[in-house]
Image 1 (cartoon, rainbow, N blue to C red):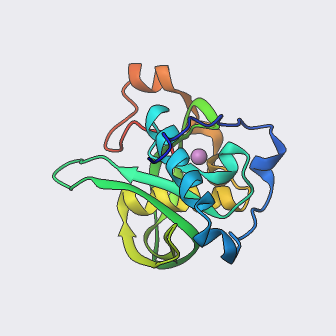
Image 2 (cartoon, helix red, strand yellow):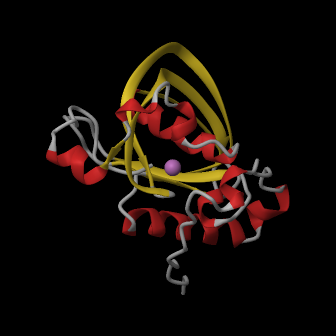
Length: 185
Ligand code: NI
């Protein structure tokens, strides 16, 4: 019987792992069950903490993988929780769009972050299979945010100005939100 996924502790800004460059997942992990377990725990933690993404370094695992999902939004279908291992990102459309971001490791804050509009991501699944997809808009934003965690980069580093930085409560109260989802990456 499969083991119930565990809830992992999400580390916060100040923990040195959030500022480290993570290591590629070694080949032998793909067939060990260890990676599958970590993937399932990441997904469970992401969903319970109400995030749309969670990278392994955010649970103090210095490995290059992350979980993400996208709830159905404005006529777009849900993207089911997905684990991407050892990803590589290529920017397809370098036009930058600003959008609101939050982060489970920086709880309570929101800020406007410019991100490339369209990207291509290649990586592996937990089984070692090939994964390749093109993402745009919010989907591309979430992937870029999670990918950054693998290099020790957080959304605050990507903001062009701190002026939009807002506490979540005020963000909701003063209606600074317009189109994006109210979720942490
Ligand atoms: Ni984050």
